Image (cartoon, rainbow, N blue to C red; front, side, top):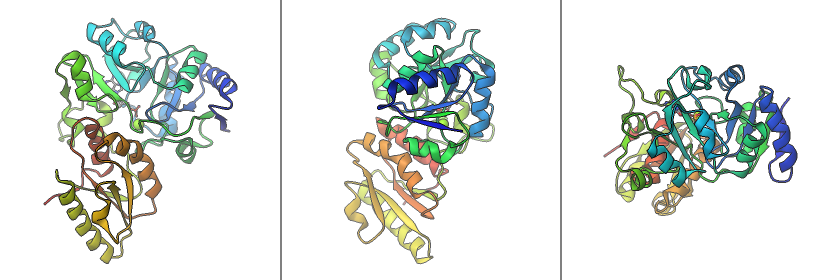
Length: 346
Ligand code: AMP
Ligand code: MG
């Protein structure tokens, strides 16, 4: 049985009960500012193992530990490098996960056997209250079935996990809508997964930051992913996703409109994910505005829920590329995976 609590009106009860569920080895889905997480006691290997089973997540894809205060990392990392201190002071609580050498208290189930562990402090009252009540770091991936778009509302979590987990805390829609930035501080700082804390923001405080090749490119057959999650098919709705790639939005819209017309004439159900700026170029075609190109964070916030909304309802979802700067990098990272890297170019 799954119990659901409103994280605002049933705040005290929900957090108290969920905290004890976590301590006793159960699973709780909870809102964060990025996406909904599926949490278990991060110090209990058997509880963490249940997350993998429920999601159908490959066992070699490690989880992020969520903490309620900065000083909690002391017990989880081998030591705290200076750059981590600066980053935590600047961006925590917030959508930045830091990967660093683990201490011996972190179970292998969390790290998939890696010598490093990923940690973050979420910027969400409900998530922080839950971690405090639990009294342990909470291991949590996104609360979806593996491979599907991450959940940004409690409704999405219900669709995927109802009956399979103990509690869902409903805190309304998530602000960022994409998972956290994952930054490795083992060796040269490198972004393994882009997110709400951008490369530009990181570089302003710690200097040059590399971007792992897998962020925007499919892994080569013999290539090893710095972040195991990058090698799996991800974020895919039940529809074919195609990206019109062009730096000029008008030209991208032209590519998309042409593809739409070809597909529609074959009887395929098509929808275009447009932006405020490009919607006029798609006249007469089925199209939804998912955000404003001038503020890519609006497109990020709507991407997963839009993919879910048309999953199984359209055969083809046609989307525009964004420049790969600021939040555009995170947007393109998720969109390319949702599309299985299928693009149309001139
Ligand atoms: P999710 O839990 O679905 O948000 O995914 C967590 C992401 O963080 C995945 O892409 C993981 O591969 C990555 N990750 C977690 N722990 C580590 C680690 N120790 N080293 C590298 N990547 C990690
Ligand atoms: Mg995930």
